[in-house]
Amino acid sequence: MGEGAAAADGPDFSLGVSVADMADGAILSGRVGAEPALLIRRGDEFSIIGSACTHYQGPLGEGLVVADTIRCPWHHACFSLRDGRALRAPALDPIPCWRAEKRGDLLFAMEKIDPSTRERAPAPPTLGRVVIIGGGAAGLAAAHELREEGYSGSLVMVSADAAAPYDRPNLSKDYLAGSAPEDWLPLRPRAYYEERRIELLLATNVRAIDPRARLVCLEHGEPLRYDALLLATGAEPVRLTIPGAELPHVHYLRSLADSRALIAAAARASRVAVIGASFIGLETAAALRERGLEVHVVAPDSTPMQKTLGEDIGRLVRATHEAHGVVFHLCESVVAIGEDHVALASGARVPADLVVVGVGVRPLTTLAEEAGLAVDHGVLVDEYLETSAPRVFAAGDIARWPDRHSGERIRIEHFVTAERQGQTAARNILGAKEPFEAPPFFWSRHYDMTIAYVGHAGAWDRVEIAGDLEKRDCIVTYFCRDHRMATATIGRDLDNLRVEAELEASTGG
Image (cartoon, rainbow, N blue to C red; front, side, top):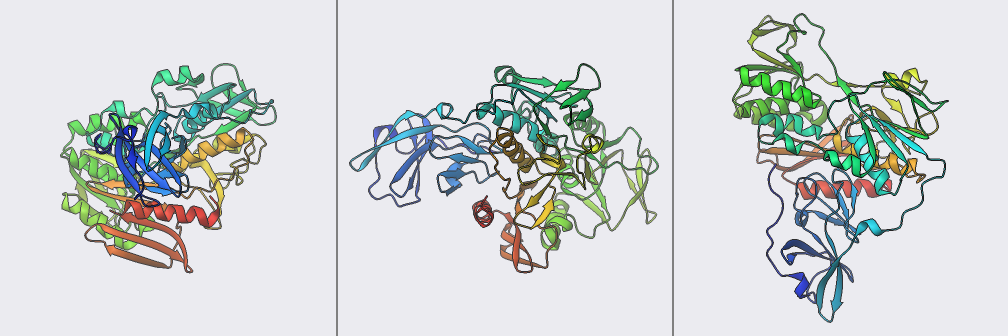
């Protein structure tokens, strides 16, 4: 993952620093005592904040200042320059923020600002209990935001997963590759749930929901009555139905348990066939190559990732994997899985003592459908993420919402989008009436190459490339009828942040 935190060097802002020649918009690296810090000028205002993002320690000094916020270049977390609050996922914790005091031409860092002392609107008096179904990114972000916004009522998270909410993107990246310990995965320590009075019901299945009676019926135990409900049930892998698909060496990757099982299987294997050239498939391929396995990728597409990223980036992704020894079998499909091979439609056989299937996911909408909620390729929600049933909201992989930028209803399976929807849903549960307008954002890493993507382009008729694709230093923009739909960047993190800010400005988000 890398270390983003800067060393505690540069001027000590607590001792005073000259700002007479500091340009508007400038960011000066320094420290407050031993703590690394940044001094930022915005017109006649000055802010002093910590230098590292609280999500994987990204370098905020290389980020983007937008109005009274700063954005992290790695994963687009957003912080307030006024009090250090984490305003947008993936960061949930605040950064240090000091009161700045100007004396003549010198600026001094004074005491730290405590963001928890800010005023909050009171929760609606009818909001006695909030129930969240789902223990993933959206559910955890919603629970966290409810408490951050001052909600003090009963808060229950119901999760079918046996593990408390964790960093799902890492399951196919560093953790699977063996370069990140499992300690990195939990989004919050177990003590957090006790301190915040979040009742966490793990390994618990929901049998039904009753929007009229406002009940959540569990498979075991008494039903839960709610005043507001958030559905954040996520998605499940699409499973193969071909001969051999149920063999014990065939694996899927969605949960922490899946990743643990795959790591154990990889320790006993030498050759792996990855079925699918999607993000999950290729990130898994890269991680298993780093573990020293021989990797073959089988997919029906002519170019990896072409449906999302197009031919140009797709060819670069393929070349990057091939340079690391991955063998591709494209325009092919698997028709059967044997004990030591996968059989292709062409008649060829690919030796494999481990098989990983990554052919997509489907949203878990059964609860919503059976409860009579409007469902169409996802749970339909309005701009406030509320479903067709009053006081029932949906977020994350299941939510299909009206996207102002594209003018379409879309459903996105991205971790950051899920978290941000959870945050927005939480505020709307508390009565904010805040439309969800954050542009979708995701990142995908393949060995030492990271692709950042912002926006949504379900289709495009023109692609523009600025920079050098082969040198992994480029901006790729996708247009539909001359309307910019999305942008992918490689080696241009700051440009990706700028595009996100422009997309926000164009929709009011």
